[in-house]
Image (cartoon, helix red, strand yellow):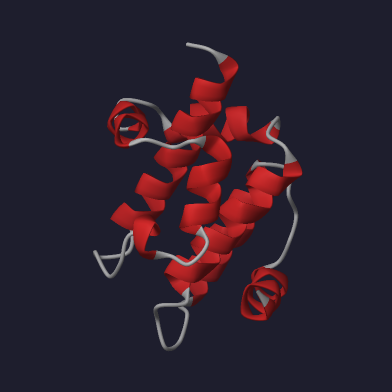
Length: 119
């Protein structure tokens, strides 16, 4: 597996994990920033299928080395997903902070939410 494919699969694994924890409200593909990420990484449906057999922890390690633009797009999509709730539960905010710290992108949910609303 080449580095670009590993990065695509890692992104997909993290998005799938977040979607699974949200009780099926919406999918990443429905988010406003998903198309931008998909175009940047050339994500395919096959990447999402391969991601189902990958560990989240392994994906986080791969994402630590990812370019900051990809990390920011990932943060924007997670913010989009969580923003579907009228009141965003504390555990989702904590999960967001944990994810961002795990991939060496220490940005707060509030900062991403503010950026998301300006785009």
